[in-house]
Length: 214
Ligand SMILES: [Zn+2]
Image 1 (tube, rainbow, N blue to C red):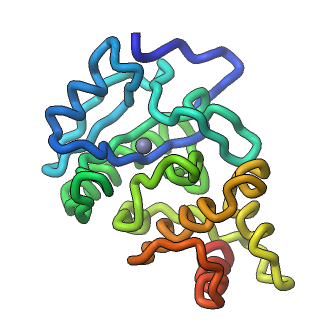
Image 2 (image 1 turned 90 degrees about the vertical axis):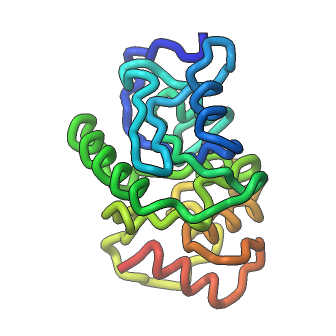
Image 3 (image 1 turned 30 degrees about the horizontal axis):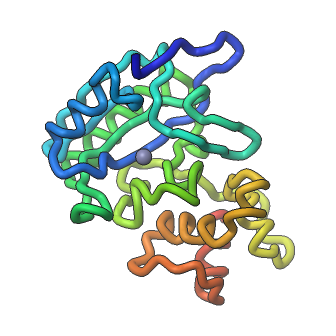
């Protein structure tokens, strides 16, 4: 079995976006749907825009692994997972296709409505496991699917420290403590930087504030 039942007190709150990180769609499809693979996903979107529903969202798919976000631990319990076909950083990371964005936009619109999911809860694998994961990565543009993840309503009142910004972004406090440099890299991926480092430059600070606030 590569999925499990959701516990009654754990309701769907998040959508986690991934890339497949495999050489072909066929390989990814087989791995994600094979009973003994230890991984699974609710939806897979191919480069030509086909949406495959591999597991009903009422079940818990195994896509996030060890993960934390805000005050939540083990995000599979609370999420629906979507994989986008892409070879990934290991096998040749490419831009996501227009058809993929279009299908993802439709799917997310449907899921947001049906599960009452907020824009701020549409998150990346790299956010919830920054020490291990890079997907969907810096070539993924969330604004292409009409999702506005951040933009806190309060204006920037005082100069936040980087740690405070990381916490407002949503990283779990243990991750900020243990994996700060990976958290910064994850934010840089969200900002679609071409080069991903953990350097806290002035430009990064400014871009980070612009990402979070009005
Ligand atoms: Zn992933």
